[in-house]
Every structure is written in C-alpha cells, then in structure tokens.
Length: 131
Image (cartoon, rainbow, N blue to C red; front, side, top):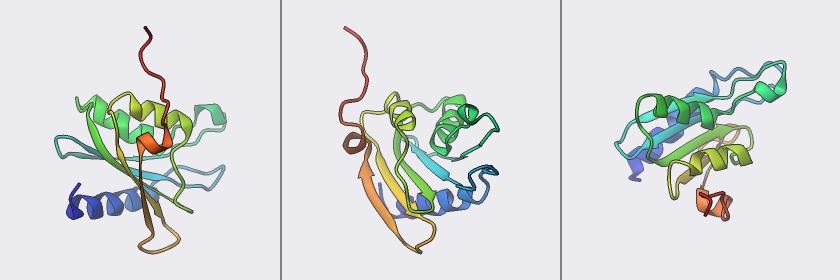
C-alpha cells in the first residue's frame, strides 16, 4: 500500500465513522476496505435492538465489495474511539477473502493516531477448509 492509499483509507474510515448507526452503545465504527483492483468500499456498524442482529463496519464494507464482484482485499482502515481491532467474527469473515490483509487502526479521539497490523497477526490460526 502506498502512502496515498494509506491516507485515503484513514480519511474514508474516519468519515464513515460519523455515519454509523449506534443509538444503543454510542460506539461508532467506520471502515474503508481496499480491493486488489484499487477500489475502496466504506462501511459502518449498524446496531439493532436485538444486539445479535448488529453488523460491524468491517463486514458492511466487505459485503458491499462482494456485492459488486470484488473478493480480493489488500487493506482495511478501521476508525473508532480507541482505535480498536476487529472482532473475531470480522477477522474470520475477512480471512475468507484474502491470505493476509494490512489493517490500519485509527483512534478518532487522537488526531493522526494510526496503528498498523495485519490479519495474520490478529488471527494466526484461522479456520480453513476441511480435509
């Protein structure tokens, strides 16, 4: 990922964070997902009264990409208070579509605070095909 893509992903994830629907937890998360083809998809967390129906920003972005035929991801930026990592479900969901993924964790409360990690570091023993 080049510096321009890095900055764009950080900006778009932070922008998306403001659009999240989080009336119950007030914990907004935005994501910007980069495909191998260079297209970026934004996503937000969308809460529901029945908390089990809530969907995370990472899966919203990936679902948008997949619905347009993009299934090969190279990087994702995730913006939230504290710059939290993806949940376990999102880690496994993203692992379905890439061998590894650069992950930028943006703390929206601290200007220019971005941590970089990878999907392989966060999910070293992911579920793979049987047999």
